[in-house]
Image 1 (tube, rainbow, N blue to C red):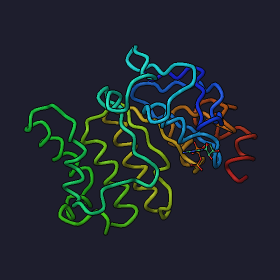
Image 2: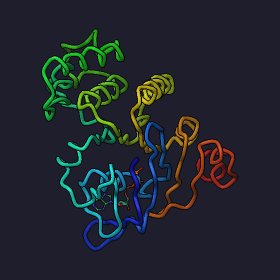
Image 3: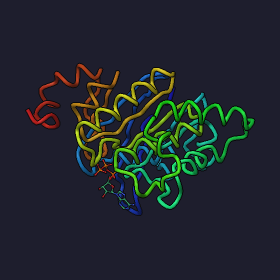
Image 4: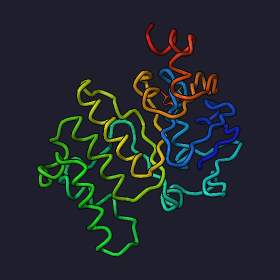
Length: 235
Ligand code: ATP
């Protein structure tokens, strides 16, 4: 379980998170929704140690990780799939997947087994393993970014706007994969602007506005909440 308590953070003199608290239950999908600039990406970057917190705590496996370096946080089983995927465009699909396992100290056979099931999970990556990643479609690149993250064998996966820029049918494929990954026992914190999709998929959700959590509840509760409907579901 990941527990964020009262964190604040910002850039330079500007504070953009003002005492955020949220819990990500093990084995579940938790979502953080909110409009542009609300602080979703900053929250993920705080968890990863990319943005330093100014106060509060982030506890993972009974340890406050808020002062750790990013490499230490990755080493504790947390992986971020950033907005815009950030795959390595000049490398092949296979090389990108191998990069995902770069930090692992497991035996080669275990990594090879993981590669086999990741390729089984994504037939599109299997059939294109020699293709340069930069020449893949947006949906394929998102699959690759998820596959690369899985190659690091994380327990907790942070996903920043996986639906961004993808056609609806591809978004459905990406979300099918997210459910499969959760069913494998991974824990997911999903940041999304597509609130309907995120809340329909998540067990629990939080709404962030101007750096503060303003609402929380099960995915279904938030979907039925009139304030959420008005502000985020376009109803
Ligand atoms: P979006 O959905 O548009 O990505 P978000 O909810 O993820 O939005 P953040 O990217 O966390 O929001 O941004 C929160 C606030 O912090 C915004 O006002 C943004 O302009 C500011 N901000 C983000 N990154 C930086 C940065 N590197 N330097 C300065 N300000 C930043």
